[in-house]
Image 1 (cartoon, rainbow, N blue to C red):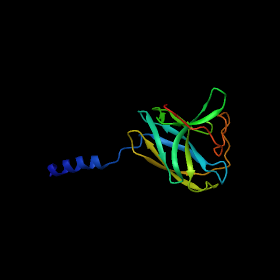
Image 2: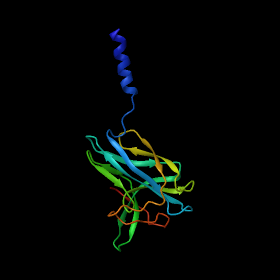
Image 3: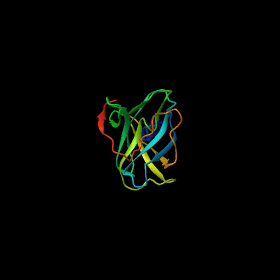
Image 4: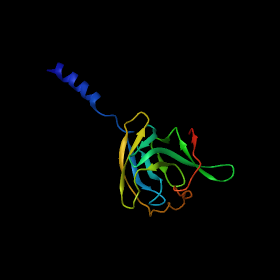
Length: 167
């Protein structure tokens, strides 16, 4: 009988999905667009890693937009804030956190497929390096103001220079 249990247990171990960055918690997610007619929007949240190993967010997907990218804001040599894609993703250190916030790192929705209306919810899939994807539900909050003491607020409905960064 032991002969049959061991192969079954071994097969079951491979059938279990890998954890999406063990110990990772997503807190306070929300999405917004600058107006109901905007063609782009963004999602913000806190990525908290209670695990023993760093985790790297390398992408995102949602049916709310034709393209979803990880972005940051960088000040150019003329003092103008520009949004840039971060191709390498964002590291969430072991025992630490990484904030996606207005005026900083964020998930960018380009080519919205529907308006982001106050009170709506959208599905967002977060893609991690070496771990399972994680799907979260993100409420749309067009009224939320940037947290006190954080970076500048930027209107995602305006045109920004898009380049590439290798962070």
